[in-house]
Length: 179
Figure 1 (tube, helix red, strand yellow):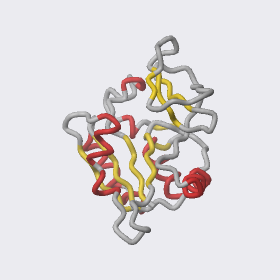
Figure 2 (cartoon, rainbow, N blue to C red):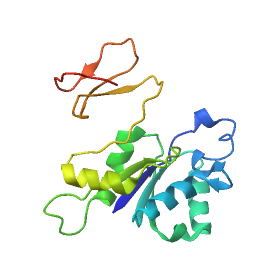
Figure 3 (cartoon, one colour):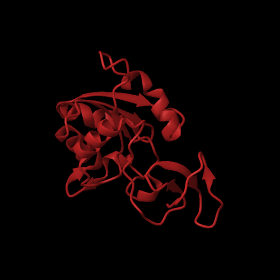
């Protein structure tokens, strides 16, 4: 299984820690966010990763080289201009495409933000994704934010809302919608 780690952002919420380094190299408990993310992905069978970079990109490249890519096949996707999540993912599409027989479909991959720490069981998520044959499987957490995803009673994504008081933007009709 392949994965993409989103690490191109400016890390503004982590300032002043990111004034002189990318958020991927901020340390938590003596380990960088990038090392923690790569270790978790490797523990769930991921061996090939692409990382998008922008802010202090060369520091990430040097860090990976100094650590022998943590024993993984890692490619770098440089973004001279930030592409946001969708643009970064689209730029990495060639890497993420499956290069073998997989029932004529592209194989699933994991998309992981470098600055999200969790104990979620990625293996169970992968199994659920396979069993339901979903287009995408998301791990979300209920929290205060300025952007909300909306789900129906079957836990299927049906829209979004940019603020609690704003009218929802729906992609399909659904009953019992909740954020």
